Each structure stands twice: as C-alpha cells, then as structure tokens.
View 1: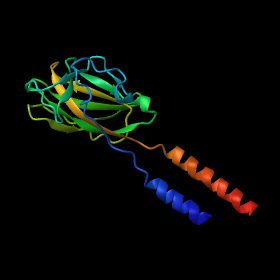
View 2 (view 1 turned 45 degrees about the horizontal axis):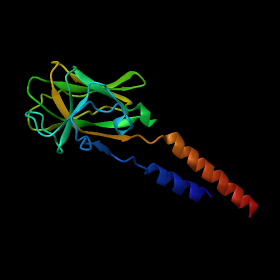
View 3 (view 1 turned 60 degrees about the horizontal axis):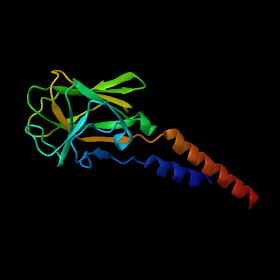
View 4 (view 1 turned 90 degrees about the horizontal axis):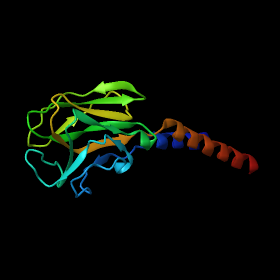
Length: 179
C-alpha cells in the first residue's frame, strides 16, 4: 500500500497545467472584447482589431486587441485558481511604453520590465516571482498599443491533488482490510 501511495505522489507531482495562448483570432469583427472572453474578465476598454493596420501588427494573424486607456486589465479569478502569467506580444509606435503588474488577492506580486513597442511584435515576459489572479497592463504614455498571444497557465491546486491521493489511500486500505 505504501508503494502505491508513493507512486501516486510521484505521478501527482508531475501533473502540469496546460499552457494557454489567447490569440484572439476567433474575433473576426473589430469591436469591444466580450467581457467573459475565454472565461476571463477583461477591462471593458479592450477592443479587437482584425486585419493589419500599421503599426499594430499581430504576432499571429489576423487579430489583436488594443486599448487607449493607460493600458487595461485581465482578471483571471474566474478560473478558480491562480495562474503563472508568462506575458504577451505587443506592437505599436514608440509613443507607448508598457509593463505588467501582477496581483494575487489584491497584493502586488511583481512588476515586469518595460517595453517600447514597434511594428514588429515583441514578447514582453512578465517574470513574476509567483502566481497571480489579476494582471494590469500599464501604458505610461496614454496611447494606443496592440497586444496579442496572451500566455498563461493555471497553477494546479496542491490541496486537490493531495485530497485525491488521500481518498485513494483510504479506499485502498478499506479494500485491503476487507480481503
């Protein structure tokens, strides 16, 4: 029985969440981003832009999202677990300068480096030291920029994994005693 539990713990330790990349390419009409797009809450100022318009180049054709509101926010809390926020691609003119601020439970987790965009989409890594449930995209110059390929992965809840292992262990013990 101890061997089975050890194998389950080993397998549970290798459980990894899938990396999610939101490319917005299913939004073929240029309009405001749906508030619950991809199961997340979005700043109501985000808009989708389908097709090329200089200098807002998508990193994956044909759609990007953009805003002109000192940035915008993405709320990951509807997922029910925090996320490891990897970052996103940005394009635009040199009149913008953006960075990410990541929060968990209202507390600041980290601030990314700053990116001055260009017509060539460039990935801005978040490099937060821990998981977040809310990301603020900050533009220091109150100007347009485009964002594409928002990348994150949900963080598995260790308690759920351990609870499953405990349940299987108890079931195994009961089977062993009844045999």
